[in-house]
Image 1: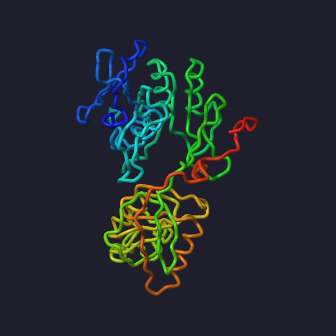
Image 2 (image 1 turned 90 degrees about the vertical axis):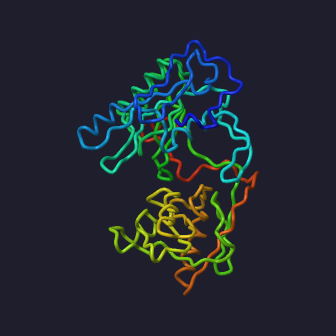
Image 3 (image 1 turned 30 degrees about the horizontal axis):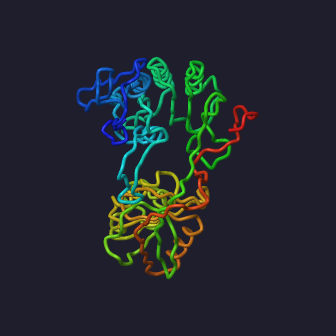
Length: 383
């Protein structure tokens, strides 16, 4: 967790309940400590616990690569996922919030008046070793949360496929928590739209998918006299003019070990800087993160990006906070972009500045990336 986030302000909150046993643990002197409340505190009443659990991960590191660095002994969040999920569940009211000036208003979580505690169990991939969330650390964190006195466990992690309950650390941890009267809510996963990809499907878990909101951030891509509607939360192009347009597949970096498919998907390092500089690049969705594609284009000197859906993504477009001017298009509109590039000697494109539009319909709609049923472990239970 990043405790300095405005989402964890505690204005208007009363004393921490006397039943609470949680604390903040900071054992790495080189990392800024996470401060949170104890009963004696009068100002820290929102974030009331922060622990880390890395013994399982560190044991794995020691077996696989003893020269790789161990996980830091700190609950501090360095990539944003824990802060994002915790504030979504119970972030405080934050007035005058926006994303690069878009959608200005008051931000809040689902239960803004609730207190929160963070239990860090996942560790990032490094150059020496792959990261992950180990069952032993998940089980240890769940037991600590039960001991601390939580009322609800919100678990925003899971595997890439469902496992039998007796082999599923999250299911086992959740069963013990539920037996103690604690509600457990888990994410269904981000492996959609593949059928049967839903995870965290034990019957004692409330499994939640991802959906859209009733707002849009439209931006338009102009090519060859056509105006294609997309979504984005990016900045505007440097100048209001058309820029050269090229497909990632046409600018493979010859000094890399990447394939044409990697370049088409705009993996970091796959694009040739000499052919990318000053251009808008059309990237195909898939293989790597959407925002990462824009990073790849920017690192290679590109001026903007058009993110085109692959068949699995269909018509789902997402307003991401890209690192450069960008637009996300549907499968059919993206196909028009690639067709225009192939059929035109000197293709040019322009991306408009996004706007905020409230009250869009239909909403909510399930996100294409949200894992789907049927429940392959216990088919008689719908999930």
